[in-house]
Length: 295
Image 1: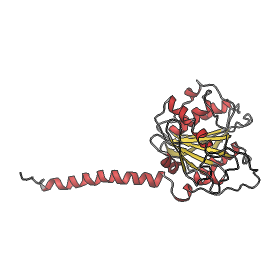
Image 2 (image 1 turned 90 degrees about the vertical axis):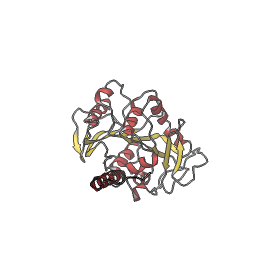
Image 3 (image 1 turned 180 degrees about the vertical axis):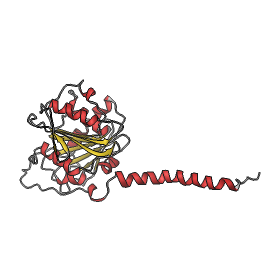
Image 4 (image 1 turned 45 degrees about the vertical axis):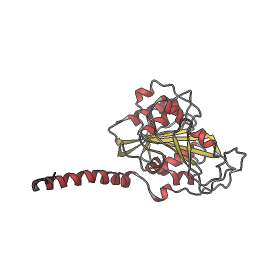
């Protein structure tokens, strides 16, 4: 049976539809890759200056001397991508920066989205990028095992543990700090675009004071104002003075309990935007683990 061709008047609209759909499938991912992902040096491990740090007896797994990145998994199977300083020394204890992913991202895209590898390894951190899972109590407890999984292979000081992450990752960073029955406890948290309101936090008990740096977009329409509400709760928990002052484009609370530095850093982005603050994030993490004094 012969196949009838379309009348000429249908060709132009059909061509436009094909171009639009093709543009969405090709152009949208390309736009996201250009505007929201990191490339180049941000993803490369840097060398760290170990001078002044004494070697220590550190039990480590068989891959402790392997070149990074190393792929690990939590007990529940969540993938973890690990980067060490380029000149990683397995005889020295390292602080650990765990980066929890936004919904739908695996560890590789999580790394490209946040772009913390170079800055963090230059500061002496081992960095672990966790993949995402749908948020449930079970998943949150499994993600609490990211740090022990890394410490099983690398020389990690779990008393110098910093959590960060965006959206779901920010929520996880926060939850693992205030849930009382989960270990290990983070030394500091740096949640971004977390989906936790002040009224949600008000139902929780305050943990012991810890450094908190809240990151949130001014144009976040999914969780509008959540970051500022969370920062106020943490400032109260850290027993800070009630009124913050501005410092380096952040609101900073004074008079906090020792070890309770609290700051809220807004940025002009939307919920999809990770703030371009890698140096500030790592500097805050360094202060929290005792590698750098407060400016």
